[in-house]
Length: 129
Image (tube, rainbow, N blue to C red; front, side):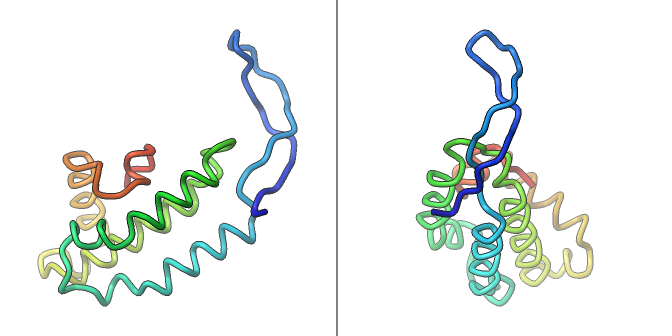
């Protein structure tokens, strides 16, 4: 199933916070998704543009977000962080001016994410770099 049920804080319709037994992405599912992203080997696809990468991986990322972010979206943040890190590594290999500058590559990617959030579904869901 891919979910872990445990006590989490929730809000009712009046904004009151209470403890609820809700599902969130499981540790094993999160690990499997990160291994899948690692298997894509994005950093070796330096001949592709960021739009090409978005078109290649958009359906799979959208499926993960639709499935795992239904009940507890913040549980997906570790996977989204890993996706953004993979894109940073791709940018560092693609552009010479970003080579060896992880912070500069992350800032470049965050500017792209703010200007074009439709490229990747996890950016649209609010998981910006």
